[in-house]
Amino acid sequence: MNNELLWFAEILANFFLIILAYKLFGKWGLILWIPISVIIANIQVVQTVELFGFAATLGNVVYATSFLITDILSENYGRKEANKAVWIGFFSLISMTLLMNIALLYTPLAGDDFAVKTHESTRTIFSLMPRIAFASLTAYLLSQRHDVWAFHFWKNRFPTDRQLWIRNNLSTMVSQLIDSAVFVLIAFYGVFETAILFEIFITTYFLKFIVAAADTPFVYLGKQIHKKGVFWVK
Image (cartoon, rainbow, N blue to C red; front, side):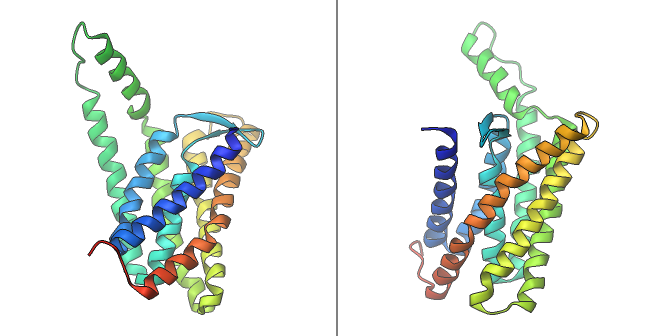
């Protein structure tokens, strides 16, 4: 299976797991997905692959689904619950970064080659690069806060259920534009030439844009689940 097919399969797997979490645990199933998405995204991002002829890092899909969560929360439970989920994600990202970098300070067991290799592999994934960490945290907080604000801004102008796709897409696509621009500028400005910087930005946003467009049916599905109010775990 080529990378592109795997990528689309990953999108469907993420959406399926989100809906499953919602059906199982209700509102808290959605909130649970926020720390899952930001932590997994920051692990996957170290892997670089080729997608649609461009070099791309993994993690874009699962991270982009966090915007689907805040839109469903905004629609079904209001701005306060959506903002709470954003701050939970921010806290989980800081906690993971801090705790894993403390773990890296330990000295692996002498003479145990497996322990040494595991330690080095863990360092590759979790070692703190201050500029990248700051870029990730800043982009996450600005884009997610904007997404919640923008969703309710457009909801006041397009309030009907039929118009849900409008407020979902307008809020998410602009928020992901902010996320990509802020991250790329903070993380890579001065590191790469302008042309390469622009290509990284376009590629990153293009992949998130596809996820944003694909998540629209699942926002409607989330609305239907909320209306029925039947969750499997009481």
